[in-house]
Image (cartoon, rainbow, N blue to C red; front, top):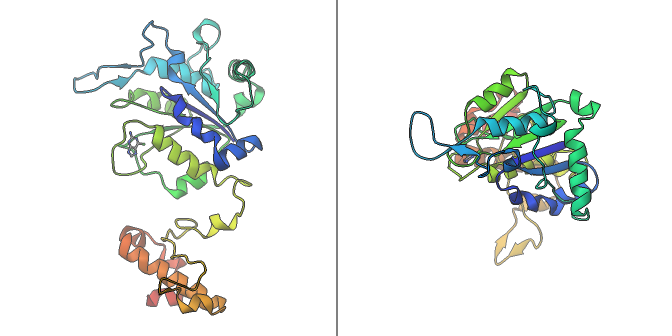
Amino acid sequence: MDIDIVSVFPEYFDVLGLSLLGKAQEHGLVRIAAHNLRDWTHDVHHSVDDTPVGGGAGMVMKPEVWGACLDELLGSGTSGNITGDDCADHANTTHVGTATQSASTQSATTESALTQPSTTSLTRHSTLIFPNPSAPLFTQRDATELSHAEHLVFACGRYEGYDARIPEYYRAQGVDVREYSIGDYVLNGGEVAVSVMLEAITRLLPGFMGNPESIVEESYTGGDALLEHRQYTKPAVWRSLAVPDVLLSGDHAKVDRFRRDEALERTARIRPDLISALDCGRLDKADRKT
Ligand code: 6GU
């Protein structure tokens, strides 16, 4: 999977070189590049935003800068001329998690990848994602679907948002454009939301997790999105608190039943909205009693 992230704070994504995602990049499972939006500006101030048309507080991100940037990253040449002098130099592009690369090889890699679209970049399917607090919620279902994508481009907005014509334009060009919120609260910009979505997506890549079963069993996965049952490890008694007896019984059917009941009970109590959304056909006879 190929991932491009555009932000006015690309350093935000330096942490993606750490941990499991860093390993996944080293192993070639995923390539992640963070780009600075200001590299596509042409004015002396490198401005990326302007006042809202119609008035109001704050600033809105300009369509021209995003247009130049996204035309290039999507490799589609949708606005016609995306070569030569129209391209800024992208000294600030960082290949996240490739710490061993020198600055010069890094920039050489970037240039050839971005300015000489290969046949694959002309034919590959790209998905363009805008974090947006006013968009539909990003769910595990979206993460699963996007984990099969070939190329993801995350466009991080800052300030009061981005000009609405940016997603509209690319959608009209036939690009798969998504806008997602990660929850009912307001963040200063899309960077944290993109980090969240990226982690949810990339951990589902085949070969990413050491133990693939941990993905299958967890909350929200599969058709029925239930909260997970509680977990215990040894010792059987800690500070006079005992692990439930059934978990020590060795009776796998009983253990499964106990965990399923607990998942249903916790979900009904903590997230009744998930129970209402359950597909009744997926409940078994014993579930109906709980
Ligand atoms: Cl995607 N962006 C911002 N700025 N705030 C958010 C969000 C996204 N999702 C929840 N809050």
